[in-house]
Image (cartoon, rainbow, N blue to C red):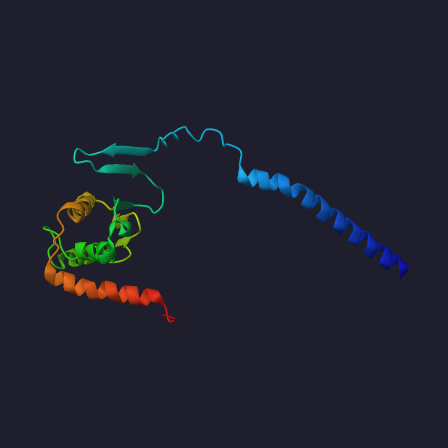
Length: 195
């Protein structure tokens, strides 16, 4: 019993010593957190990955091309618009999301629902292969195109769809009424049960 109590006292003393050492180091860590040391090379621009092709079109659209091994035989197209819900005024809340929905309702090449029918015929799924999201600073349209023999035409159409999303979307008032209800329902669902 005395041996156990000696071991316990020794452990207590070493724990107290560790606490004292930790308290002694506290001012050093506080100074380090208050003024962290400068990181080297943060003022330098990172070099581009040589596997990435960057460029800009005459209209000002910037593009990035990168080849991935997975998923095989798919072109993953993204149209990223540098505008999102932060651009909305107080009386416009939700308009960016509404416009994101309206863009899918029609373009000059695919008016009123023809886009969904076309992608269904090509074996693409709405939501999985064609989708969009609106964030605070960006609105992103995603289109994943299968690449098989003779599928360059499908890739060309995919690029055309994204171009029309950006520049020529048909924003019709009758579609606005329908999509407004959908966006409001999405908002209500995001509130959760406690709201």
